[in-house]
Length: 212
Image (cartoon, rainbow, N blue to C red):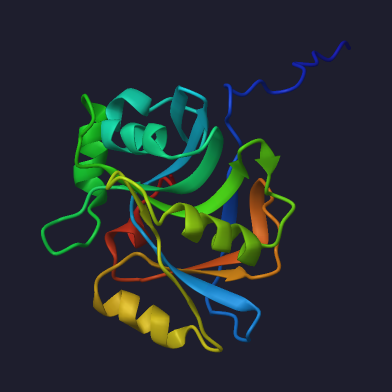
C-alpha cells in the first residue's frame, strides 16, 4: 500500500500557530506564575511587515478586512515589523466582552468596534522573541503599548502568589476566567502546560462547544 505524504503544512505569510493554554481545575500557586483575565473573543495573531498587515484567526483565516480598527492600530505602530498574539473582542456598555456580538459581526462584514487585547509579543523589528521568557516578552510588549491606537489595548496581568483572588474577581464580573502563565516560559505553538486556563463555570463560554 502506498501512503500519500501531504508534505508540510503551508501557513499564510506571517502566521504563527498560537500557544494554547491547558485547561485546569485549580490554579497554580507561587511567585513563578502571573495571571491574566481570559477575555471572551476570537484568538488573533496580528502581523505587520512594513506596510503589509494581516490579522489571522488561530487557524490562519484572514480576518484583516473585518477588524479595521486593529489593522489601523498595527500600521500606526512605530516599528518595521511586529507579531502580536491577543484576543479580538467587542465589549458591552459595562466593559464586559460579548462573544455573540463579535461572532455576528465577523460573520457579516466585521465591525469597527472590535479591538485587540494584546497579551504576547512574538516578533519585533526582525527579532524572534519566542525563545525569550514570558516576563521578557511581556515587558517589551508593555513598552510597545505605551503609544498605540485604541484598536489595540494591553491585556492587564497581575503577579500574585495565589491567583484565587484574581479568579474570584473575574467570576464576580462575569468574565470567562483567567489564564496562569509561567514567567520563565518560552512561547511554544500548540498546547502548553506552562499556560493554565481556569474557566468561570457560570460564564457563557463554559458551555460553548467550539473552542476558538
